[in-house]
Image 1 (cartoon, helix red, strand yellow):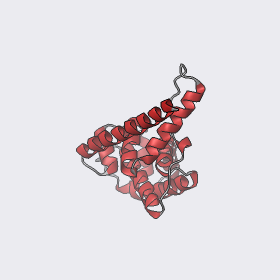
Image 2 (cartoon, rainbow, N blue to C red):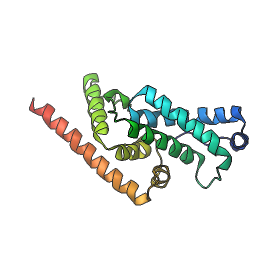
Image 3 (spheres, rainbow, N blue to C red):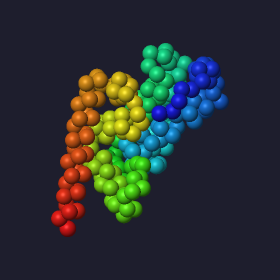
Length: 182
């Protein structure tokens, strides 16, 4: 997750300063793009959802009371925009949408296969479970912050993670067994 933003920039953005808002967006954009792309699986739809999210954030920022962390608030707006986009059309996440750190000790062909398997396993998850895994495991949010973003209780985050991780393990184990049988 991005480091905290200078509070002066946030104050200026809340007063409608477009340059300050642009700085705010740049500060969080990489993480928001990663989440949106992994949820939507399409760069054009990601751009559309983020444009909607940023417009909504700009309009709502003067009313931001600081009850939640700014990052949590922005991720919530972006998540809602992505869910709205998913509701408009059904989209399958492509396998190349998952980035992970490569294990240099593993041969390149095995790394590529593992990445594809993980991408397929993530794409098979329901969007709510996929978002939970991405927020906690890929973006580094704690359960409380992820729960705020997803607008669910903390316990729901825990149960979604448990269910999603089990499904990912099953999917990856099935792929591994299939590969070993060849």
